[in-house]
Image 1 (cartoon, rainbow, N blue to C red):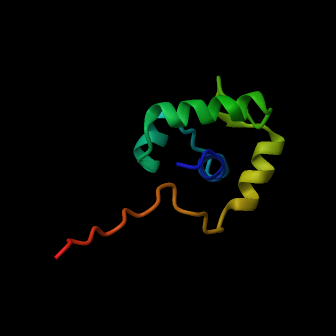
Image 2 (image 1 turned 90 degrees about the vertical axis):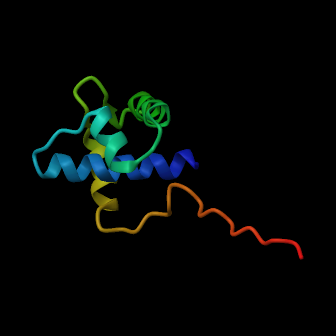
Image 3 (image 1 turned 120 degrees about the horizontal axis):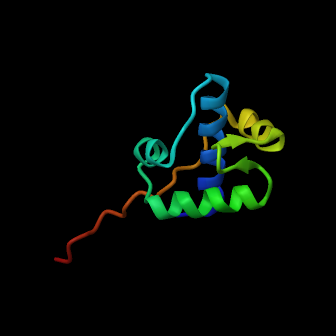
Length: 90
């Protein structure tokens, strides 16, 4: 899984929730994105350290909200690559 794609997806999801007046938690993000808890937690930590997210309140900062809002309506790459079809040897 590409951490940059996950970060963009999280910013997009958090910006949509913030626009709608909802707050997301780690559990709701895990359920919504269907990604391992530790991957989401580590990415949220990186976003917090970069100043895009206040992880204690799960609220985007101004810069995080601006980036997340710009991503709303955009189609982001898939979080996981599709599994390859295995071919049987004859």
